[in-house]
Image (tube, rainbow, N blue to C red):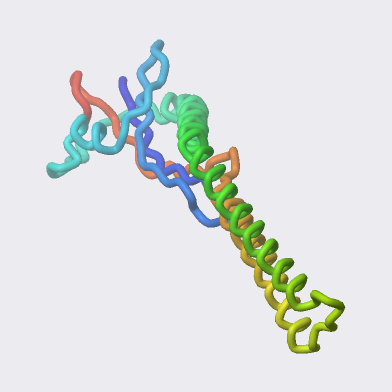
Length: 178
């Protein structure tokens, strides 16, 4: 009486772009907690690398439906754990990227301020072309900073996965159906 609910889980960013996608199975056996199997382990377990046979055996579809909410809850929790693990791996990298962007902005701003100070030393008035060049450089610097922040924001995912139930595989005679 074992069933495996095969899911595709997707975590997307705020622009609905998939950022994390995983295929996996939730094994459901009565009176035992549901467990998650990677697609690779699931393929070996049920023989997905071989020809599958539909034995057309009768099964209790109500029991199958009754276990679905538990399988979905397990799948949701699994995807949220993947999200958390991914976040922990990315935090140091994102902090370093942010530090690099801010350091670059500071170097550019300092260089621009020095150029402006040198150009106006001894009371000289900057030319309109110089003023336009400085404004362009300031806008470019700010645009690069904004693009860096936007890039980092695109890596953030929703905490609620999109789950698609793709298949349900049942066991028969003590082994998973093939």
